[in-house]
Length: 351
Image 1 (cartoon, one colour):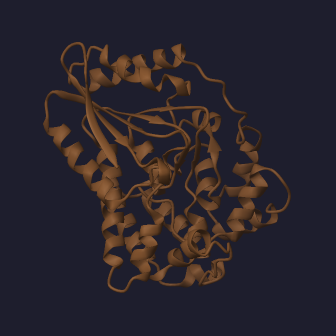
Image 2 (cartoon, one colour; image 1 turned 45 degrees about the horizontal axis):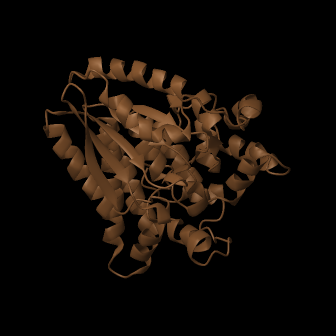
């Protein structure tokens, strides 16, 4: 389900290759996949021949659509098995944290659906390429969870309120938006994936992080110029200032009112507002509180906080109900409890 290999560069250095290989389920990660990636990253880190890691996926539909949510649902509804969900979240969050702080460059080839934990893994890499068919989202508000895998910080760092809007609404952005927002470093033609390994192999790696980062910056910029792609029309550009008006400020109750008032009508912005209205009030409260806490703590503390919050959601939140309504019974009518933001805000939460 994850394939590992290596590329031998011209000067003898090795680039480790990590390929998610579960296209039938959109490369959604299982605990076994996460543990295999953690072990291999540890081995490459200890190997002085390995100077970098390349992350990609098989298929055409998705780099990674997130975690295996159905397996998590089974863990929640099977008596005595919730600890399986605990292990998945603990290890998945650790994986993204490990990649974000990896001492060697990590290059990602992103395409198709990049969502939830998939965007977490992708965002944690140091050098990110993207194809034109990509769709990126953190849709957890729709299933009673929260944008996790460090997204309490990195998602909200996107400019002009975009990250906050994406967190609260679960809206998708496309490749043009990802480039404009700084979420990716270069857009490339999808057919160039087979040429990336060769481009990496001809670089003059030294095993020095500062040198190799600069080497990659220049090398991947040139690669993107050689393999350009036609951008889709941005869904964010025309709404950029409207989003700032909608989600700006420090008072969630005011933002809640504005989002609800704009939930009617057509278009990307209105659709996002409607998704907010349909989402879990507990998720909204968690999103807000986690983003506030993330401003004042380091990445290690955020890892611990998000992990504890995910364990809470497995037991006490709307997560099970959201997955039931969306993926199991597929009735699309989750029964959130508590049902309102005011009541969700006043309940006992882990953050």
